[in-house]
Image (cartoon, rainbow, N blue to C red; front, side, top):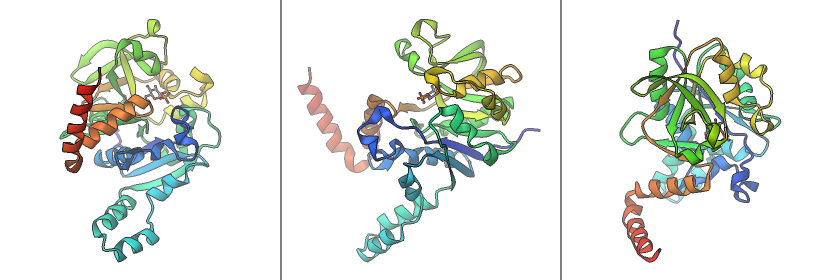
Length: 295
Ligand code: G1P
């Protein structure tokens, strides 16, 4: 029988080496897009998709992430005293966003190993995975994860979020090989591979950090050997799962920002700033001025 997706896992134990020196003391998940930490966008997407419980995989350097989603009585007291009611409500709401749980990945052995740390939290249910490096904004439409959950409801099998990227950038991602059977956003897979060379890539469809996985993935992960970059790769375990289960991809709607990449992060910051009423006009005018000056 098909089970409803209620739990999500957010792996957030990466070292953030692409953003050094900023990430020397600050987790990359806490880097703000305008004034909201990236992980808050991810948690919001999960909540808006109907997820009830979220497990965040952390490491020993990520305390401030837990603080962010906790109450801060001292700050609340000071804000109240200063008459800053709106700010006070805003920080209280963050603490009430979702039921968050934390577990530490003790060694940086890769994304697959991080997901394996969620085994006892998940139990025997299908679950969602959202990667913090991928922020997806679908203005006015369903969040990316909800679109994957709807696809799961139709196919009752694991579903991976994908997006077409320029051919020369495909080596940076996990890549799917479609069977050619496609209906709307839904694509049946024949294979997938982690970070292939551009010339070997089976398509230009990159795996974006959104997954619905069946619990059998844990068995596959336990049997996984280190793959690309010497790490236990989630993509390899999904490939293993394909021996016994059908896997689908969902080419979701929405603007995808790879915020683990500097350009993706800057793009997200500019676009989200343009969404703010108070920032739109000054930023628009500044961009126009800059564009006229740039060659
Ligand atoms: C991870 C996954 C990869 C996926 C990517 C999306 O890679 O392993 O399959 O395409 O996220 O952001 P990472 O970015 O951790 O190297």
